[in-house]
Image 1: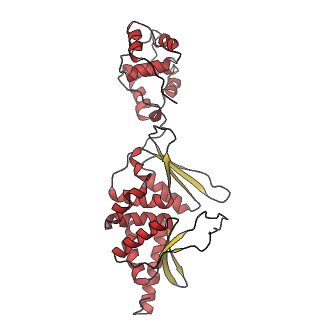
Image 2 (image 1 turned 90 degrees about the vertical axis):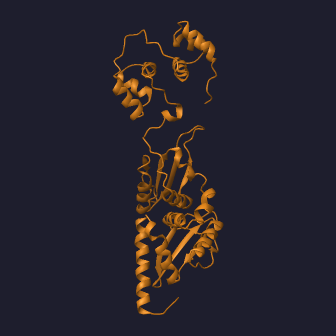
Image 3 (image 1 turned 180 degrees about the vertical axis):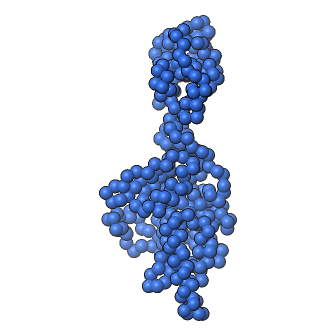
Length: 328
């Protein structure tokens, strides 16, 4: 909704001449609250109401409006008075009213920590598994970050990653057992919107790349054993991204076979058909798989991924003991 264009000089003159906010609002065909809000914005000292004084305790009002982030209307309901009375009292206390975007922030949230390694991990995780968007309004102060999963470990990881920054919502399972998750974050997480812009810088820095790759593996990777041989795999629709990851792994001494694409559109166990061809990057030679485990292992956060990685490591060590000199 566009902001109502009201003549500041004329309204200020009328208010200084003794006209009340209600009469001025009626003159311009708007709500009394609109005039009061505009006077607040212009830092005008609001005159006390001529109606009987409502007992709005200052500390309680500050707590409700500033700390608990309740709306003026909810506070008015709490004190059994009008919303305009609340706005007037806030102005008299020197408290600036929140704009519409800030006013709709229901739950408290914290800014991103600024830790560059945490940021690299989240970029990797976001590319693999997250959808990120603004909260809906053009001037929104909120980023909505979410995903869906049937795996309890993935749900728990999502909660762990974001619960210190905002209220995490986890929906009920649908008919296939899939649960949607979402968290409202402040704009310090805007780096999750255009993750591709940060990849080159991350991949050129070995420490950052290790955290990034851990996040990506937690989202899109796997460690598994087939025919008594440990393997690892990364999958994504973005073949170019996997090529960049391969180049970085080679730079850091981890040999990767060729990247391959599904021969046909994959149909999952839940009946869902992928809309695009999927790309795969695998590391399966014992020597290089152990290097990969050492490279990202300390930074994995997904409990199932860490468990499977440990099984793969044990498998390789046991095979090495039973076949000394085997370089396969």
